[in-house]
Image (cartoon, rainbow, N blue to C red; front, side, top):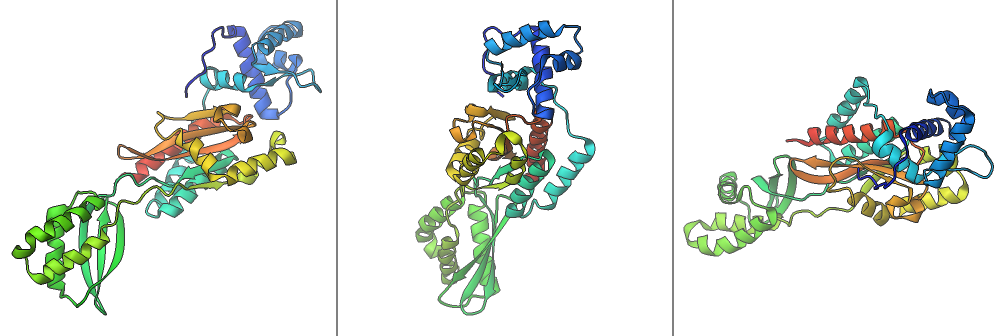
Length: 350
């Protein structure tokens, strides 16, 4: 998380009171008065002294005073200082981590179910909206290919990609081929092209067939010529994400009025907006927190977005996170997002 530089940070006493105010406001959602702060802070300060400190914090843009109340509420700038330096993060309980790990590992072999499961888990554990991008397929290298004869001049090509993914493709030929002929052709491809990107395999087969025509039999040449069509280019990112638990946000008073909800759900419907925001975290080192206007989108000015990239080996393949009001329990939410990204990375390891 990158902190906004504060040239003249509040005093230690003011920071303690700011932390107390934000914790109370996150819990209750009501402006916090000086008498409440006097009781909650544990400091031997009079309400008058606390009012003076609050006035100083208001001048610094850390808190504001709603017109209808004598109490104060934190501003995005106050939340930023809280998130970066004041909050005491709470790690999830061992039982919660075990539950997250179990649910993720149960669906790791089904990309669609995995992404949907993780977004729902984030929503369930935080009571916010969970969001996960579909993994980017950055590399698609051929590990192995096998051919199986089918009826009516068809061949089933079974491709193993990146040590994990299995793709099946039907190839149409001009004649039937024996299992022995298909095995010979598969052996040639595996010996010469295993480990190369699919798009490059296709190019190399086309280049090499002319040169090897005289050294292989016609059947093998024909099978390999047909097989090159199975080597489609590496799949591109589908630019998709799965969002779960949007209705949780209706339970927060600050987001529940009709205009705010309309703006918020319009933001959710604009896929490019959400993807652009998530993509800003794709190369981040750990958890990122966007508070209010930091997202860069007016529709999310009343929200905070907590994100973390997740990896496959050394490649960042996606981003996960939660969307909620600026009044979210950062002490719980940030560690949950962080551990979920770590668990997902561990589950995706071959």
